[in-house]
Image (tube, rainbow, N blue to C red; front, side, top):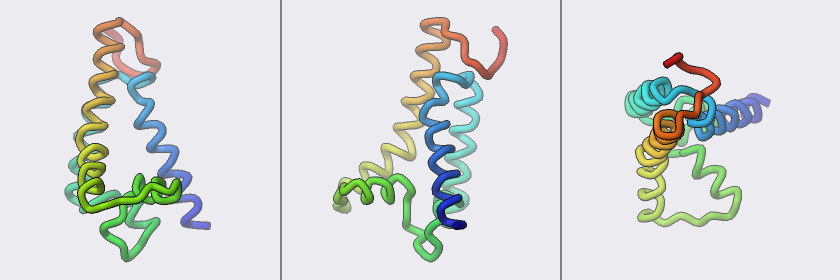
Length: 114
């Protein structure tokens, strides 16, 4: 039961992060993205993943899901996927938020008033 609740919590947080550019102010997204990156570096990965898969310090949540979906990994594509999820995806999310909120003047649901 503990693992199932960890998976659900992790999935909800992941979906919230991926969709944050729609509903959260870009400045908040940027601060949270940097804080998340620091947390990952300090903890050598995600604490939720470590709790979900104890003893496997090299485990990654997105890889776990992708393997469930039948994706095969090599060392090369595993490294590329790691860098995409760790660095590129947060930059893309921040970029989308800036594009929509500053470029197209779309107001986020949660954020600062301009």
